[in-house]
Structure formats: structure tokens, C-alpha cells
Amino acid sequence: ARKDSLSGRHVLVTAGPTHEPIDPVRYIANRSSGKQGFAIAAAAAQAGARVTLVAGPVHLPTPAGVTRIDVETAREMLAAVEAALPADVAIMVAAVADWRTADAAEQKIKKDGSGAPAPLMLVENPDILATLGRHAHRPTLLVGFAAETQTIAAHAQAKLAKKGADWIVANDVSGPPGSSVMGGDDNTVQIVSSRGIESWPSLPKQAVADKLIEKVAHALSASPD
Ligand code: C5P
Image (tube, rainbow, N blue to C red; front, side, top):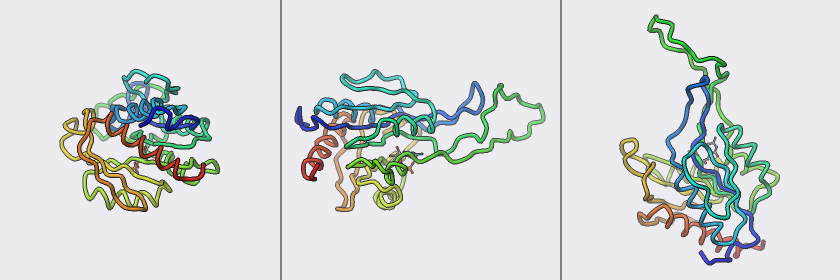
């Protein structure tokens, strides 16, 4: 994207997984390296935006010019996102855990020796993207991601409406865990909006980020503020 194409804009990005504690030593999480979200934050900063990156637990350096807020759980991520509003653009790339334990144990849970299944009561986490979709300070442009393993475009269309997002960036994460997109350096995405579906070729995650930020800058310049 052009160097100043997002100057004066505030771009809010979530990235990485969330960790939902089971007890002091165990947690529930989704697979996510954070690479795509960090690349998007970097690209937005390069385009001149003020960037707030709300990051789950990942091992990645903070991109130049980006304000990073580290969080652990989905509820912490939501609080950090709401505290960062207003934003012109929000790009929710984090792989948020859909569930957390109803009640994290204060002490390490022990096997009881009987071989019986350990009870794990789960409750739903807040949906951060959907919360922004109906927020009083809804960003002008709201972008979600969708990691799908089948009928990608159809699921993404449904997600647009359900979340109140403007675009869903859908990527195919099918394949054995750790093999392809997740943790890898390349990504193949489709951008789904009310105007249809744009399919991009397989690209390095940084190139996907640059192209997405270029599209964001274009969309903002086309809409009155
Ligand atoms: O429903 P699903 O998890 O597939 O939706 C993915 C999109 O929603 C991503 O943009 C993700 O960051 C966002 N999301 C969220 N909060 C959740 C679950 C998903 O912001 N609790």
C-alpha cells in the first residue's frame, strides 16, 4: 500500500490465539501462530495508520510503529478491543477460543486414579467481531477472518451477516494440523463481501497483508470519511 494511504486513520487488529485456563498449568486454545495478524498490523503501520494490535500469547516481535497490547483470554481481548475504540478499521484475525471453562480451578487438577473422564464444563466466550458489528462505535470498516475446512465461500457469506462484518477473509485450513496455512508462511484467501467474492492466489502472508491493506485504504477513500 502507498506510504501515506492510511495516514490519520486508526486501525485495530487482533491476532494470535487466546488461552482459556483450565487450571494453573493447562489451557484451551486454537491453533494460531499470529503471523497473518502481525503482518497486517505491520502493513497498516507502513501505510501510515496509527495501529493498535491486541495480541494473544504468541512468540512474535512487535512490528515497527505498532502499539501492542498483550492479552491471554477472550474476555481480556474483548476488553482491550473495546478500550481501543474508536477505530476507522478493525481487522479481527485472532483465533479466539469459542469456549472457556465455566470455572478455572485454582489448583492443578489431579487424576483421581479411577480412570473416569475428567469433567470439564465449558461456557461460550463473547464473540469480539460480532460485538463490534453491533457496537455504538462500530468501525467504519469491519473485517473478519474465517478459517474453514469446507464450502469456504458459503460459510463466509453466512458469517458476514451473523457477525455484522463488511468483509470476511476466508482461508482454507484443511489438511493435517500444522501442515499448511497454520504456522506456515503462505495463505490462500477469498475476500467475501456483499459485492461478491474475490479469490486471491496463494501468497506469502506478508503479501496477503499488503494487498488487504491496499484494499482497505481504497475502500476508506471511496467512502465519505
Ligand atoms: O465464528 P468464527 O470463529 O469462525 O469467526 C471467525 C472470525 O470471528 C474471526 O475474525 C475471529 O477473529 C472472530 N471471532 C471473534 N471472537 C470470537 C470468535 C471469533 O472475534 N469469540
